[in-house]
Length: 560
Image 1: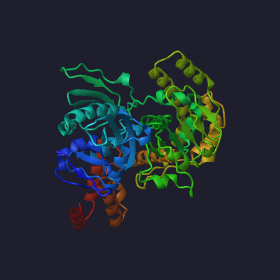
Image 2: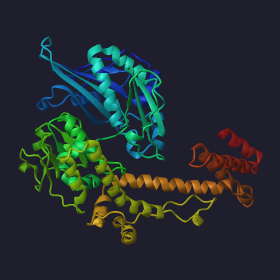
Image 3: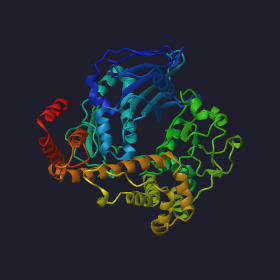
Image 4: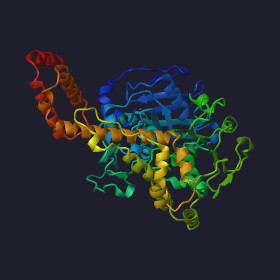
């Protein structure tokens, strides 16, 4: 069943031995499952791709092969799990696009990247030429369902190592029978004799944590696993740098370039993911790679020194990056898991980086640190408070901080909506008023973050820095789109309730035809209005068509 890829370096040609239309539902959840092994002549090589017929470019295959194994210096023995991101030009499926319309922003299918969830096994095996068994299973998907896919690859990889390709064939068939991908629903996902149960929130329900997942009684004897879609344990990743939580929040909010250096891909991918989660519910919109290698096709792009440092968060394990990224402004060097505290080392050049763990930066935060939450978290470490409780404290504090920062912006953005009296049924809907930073700053004295946050500092300076980032740009474009949709809806509701026959009395035929064509175009584009409004718009279209002469009706009928 496998779509076998014969390795010859960068040029690997997949055999198309399957009908992709049979895997439509599978493709909404996963792009494919890759098996990467170690070849004595070629190094990491793609052994197989499931299901059959899945297309990957040579560059994607090359990147997947290198990302599938930890760097040799990591010395990872036994089983290792981590996750990666890599660029993709493959379009989303129709279902994924529909899902994104209703999904929470941080859980949308990624239109520009694949997520890869890796399960790597390295064990001694005297019968093999190198004396080791080395193989990885990678789930490739557009969905950032981190917690769920970690649990899924943890189930299917060991079965493949034990049972061979038949287990991955069964996996593909099981996933192909999963329910349609949709937001705002409980999902029951049977897989290899286990049932995963979760909830996918939508924009109305917001983020749902593990404890809120519907606990339905099992109807059979299969083991049931409750798994939140994206429940990242940020405290475990951040515990060694927790004293600098607010500094890290600012660096992520302002999309500063950060390199995370760790001894294993598990550690660096967990830290990078935790960092991007610090500003939720605001999505992190800049580039980030939970695990990155010197073989990656974007290596030169991210490490070149001639231009400004790219706005990327990189997770790395190869010591070579210490020299290659010495010009980067912010470095987090992780120690072993026993180190309780990481020092802030105020050096701007990584040449001074020694072997000690630390955050190396010259960045001066705009806001003061909230010492009370840091004290509570340190007390929790000392008293061995469960990491789930520590994570909940971190998330709640940063959620409130992010909301204090964003609410004034949301309020100002809403004020850019033109007055309803300026909207006419017979003119194009107006655009939202322009965003003016100075006008926004003038609102802060009465409606600024100080109303909801006790943290003092240069909030205006932080906003100015934020306005230059991809995080702001993505947020602004989405809010501007929302306002434009509201204006379009108000305009269409007025049009649906208007007397178009009366309007047409003193109009030239060309103007009436123009209105007919515009109404048709609107109705064909699935406008953001209720079904009742669409019915009324069709009636208005009929009203207008009736006043036209028969020859013009015939021409319009031909064009419909």
